[in-house]
Image (tube, rainbow, N blue to C red):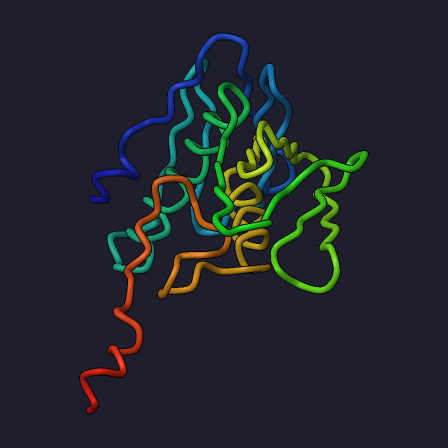
Amino acid sequence: MSRIGKKPVTLPKGVTAAMKDGSVVVKGPKGELSAKVHPDISVAVNGSEVVLTRPSDEKKYKALHGLWRALIQNMVKGVTEGYLRKLEIVGVGYRAEMKGSRLNLLVGYSHPILFAPPEGIKIETPTQTNITISGVDKQLVGLVASKIRSFRQPEPYKGKGIKYEGEYIRRKAGKAAATAAK
């Protein structure tokens, strides 16, 4: 049996879960999330717990069992606490600022990059070199952070670019000195 899947998802106070047309809907203080559950996995809401069951012990059902339990747990955490990703900008003259609801990035190109966040995502720039992305959907927060990082990925020689907070950039040595060739 899937070790993750057999554990029920506990719903904290103020959070409700319901099944509607093959989708699980989780509502909480920060918002509402829904996901269409795989038809082979059955979901039951028992009071303050969500219990998932699978049809048999086949390998694919075990994998789906654990997957959907983890996805529902992430939904519950999202509507109670929310998710947060932080990005750092490294480089001389590289900076970010909010212009209305859009993120304005100056990262070494001849033009600024304007990024409009999708609905449900909040972007803040506490300093010119830090970006904070928050929202209730874990997948969407990670996707937006990845998209912003892709505008100027960190390069291995000086480390210039947009990186996740705490990310280690492996450095390369660069060219050897010209005196070694003589």
